[in-house]
Image (cartoon, rainbow, N blue to C red; front, side, top):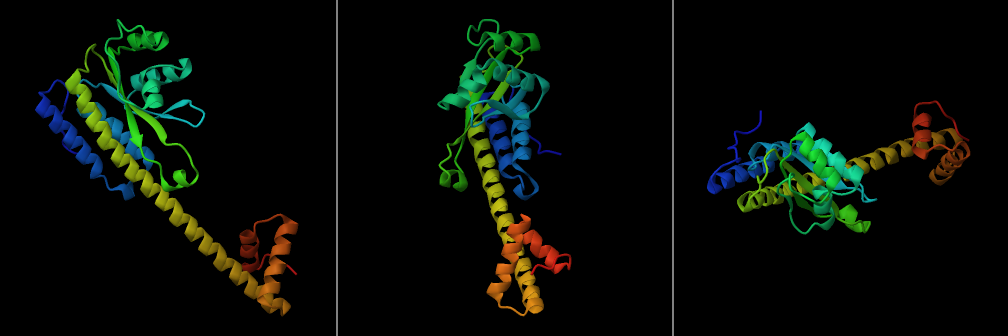
Length: 259
């Protein structure tokens, strides 16, 4: 069960602010060790649909390296299908927000909107009256900075069933929520990167240990030095086109006897 959160739709601005603050606090209270990046993103859209003023469904778009959009979390079918419509046509509010990254993109009334005709037509068919897409600012991870990769470009997409659902108060509330959600997602990404680093170090240590064991067994069998034993293992690894660690595992298990 999730936390008991006040709903923001149609609320007085102060109550709407309280709903946003409660939702952001709930995201920050997540025990990240029990979560992954996808599960945190899913919680972000679920809370957005639950508490943000006027929002019926929500989704998150991430622009991939080639510039194509992908929905990484969605609270409902309408949001997912309308995201996909934008990716197929190559334009729409969520793509514009993610690409530009300089502020919310508002579609106030699908009955009157002249931009993005393919998207707007499908939005009307599915019952969306207005749409707000807010860029999500995610800082680059240390690995991304080291590899000179650009920042992640993303947007939180908010779909309402009524036109004019996002007035100035609602837009500000959605922006505040997005900023808070971005911090939670960034924390999860940092934890995921740390997990990967720890896992990599653990694998490297385990590989080193088994190679040392195999060296010792080769030394005992061939009466050679440690350097000579390593040369035997390396040569056999190259000749059989096997990883040195895999060969070492077989040596320790008695399944291989390189010479």
